[in-house]
Image (cartoon, rainbow, N blue to C red; front, side, top):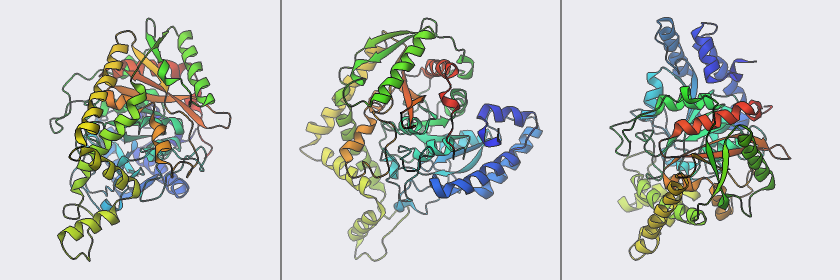
Length: 485
């Protein structure tokens, strides 16, 4: 087994025993990135010099007996996190050469543990997309089959972990942007409860939906990463000051007495047969492990996609108003006046999907339409959240597909936005409800495309979610398969 096949926890053990140094691990990963990135296009920025300097500092910390859980481990971050001294583009031309003066809280917390940042990862521009085809730096590709999308918007995060370019990565999830690419690339991805992880320093898409989370190769690593980034942050007014559990100690494998709900609205027409079969087999495995499987109903599920695209685009139109050529990044040079400069800058800086969502959101918020669209969507959102709370009075977690199909071909849906939006039909309700959910591998289609299952947990009960996922993972072999890349 090569160094880049080891998980976070396995590498931690080797670093602590001084069997290998962080500098050696980091060089191995940087070489791997250099060799594979031209084909996968997963990295926008590769941090060769800073990563090696951080690795040297980590080795010193280990030698001094000051190692923490992530010390010396090579981690990559979606290019939506502000990182002091490094370019932060959000995969947009409008921020092409923007260098942040500060770190996002999630970045600062892994740096406090002396993790090594090896690079910034490709994504859909401003996190708007389900395939990673909306990047100004070109699409990322799926390491299982380079003709397939890796999913979006954290496609670079999922593909890089699957392709052994980083041992773990940070992503963000606004409507499924961690879980859907994790499923398409056969890795583990977690969207924590809204408020569990600080959003400070994360470039905003839709502020009431965005959440930071980890992408890893197995559930134990996911628990380790969440432990590092979770917790109250006074710099984020939406951060919730509630205790953080010891996630790793909850990975007991014991599911005795656990009740898992299968929402009947998630197994309807349009669900791919291979995906349905894999998720139903996962439910059977949970029965074997001692969990009780119960059918439940989430009656307002069918309204989730429409509700999401009203709320998300409305918030995006407001958040992206700040990119006008005055404060950040790109500025049109030949404008005749101030308004012309605004218009030329935004026309040149934003891609087509971002422009589409800004126009949709501006329309939904405009005079005469606010009550009819945005306010009504917020009322529907409350009903969707209540559906989940009602279900959790009966069950401890929900089991569903992550996406209606396995990864699709590059270009297959790019000209059909509505079809693309339906890729997130099973993940969007979780963001609207503000609760937690995760994706983990549960099979492959007949033509060898990865399939993931989604576990949805009670608000702030990530510990039960991780325990439930870990028990399934230990009873199956899906997470051990890797792309031949």
